[in-house]
Length: 275
Image 1: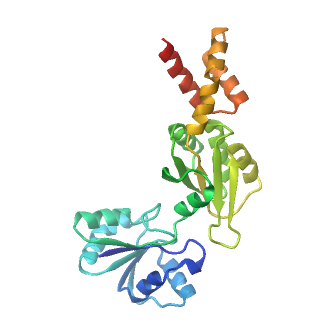
Image 2 (image 1 turned 30 degrees about the vertical axis):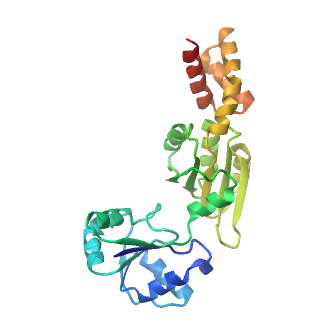
């Protein structure tokens, strides 16, 4: 069968006894980086006796058939560098291939940066979406925020320290300064930190050049939409007095601290509703 095994995201004490036993006794292991696997084993005080294979984003497609065939006859353990395989890490194509061939897939649960950041955020956890790594290019990031502007679920993103400031700034520009969010960095490590506040407050924090891999948790749009509804009439009053629509939306959005794009959409809907 195929065994997806979660590894520590920082603190080695989070390695479960089941994970340690599995790594010690496995005959075959596919790892995102075999060097990282051996370093983990050394840190845990165990020895890897398995035949190992590299499985990363550049070779997964080429190795799926071979590894699925291997898993059909043997137990094949899959690990990423940290956390759960397949979650913004290699393994998805392999799991899909195994399922298609009727190969059993099981899991050794463990640490997850996604769920850890969500749990400590203080933001709603009843409905959420994981959006993976934020785009590197500014234009693509802006389009992503525009696409998600009306998403009502809590959203989770990965980001690197050298792009966190510009990513938060682009979110603020599209979603407005009052949208609640958190940034968790160095989860489970010595200098773990979770910063909570509005996007405007987090932008100021990010200017201090924080270090470490980061997880951004962003509140859904519901609260912001309610704020925008309160000021729709103000926009319509300005338009009735002769102001063009877009400048009126920009003026009111800035004064009220709401998203221009959300307010604009709400005004259009209200005008249509009123005929």
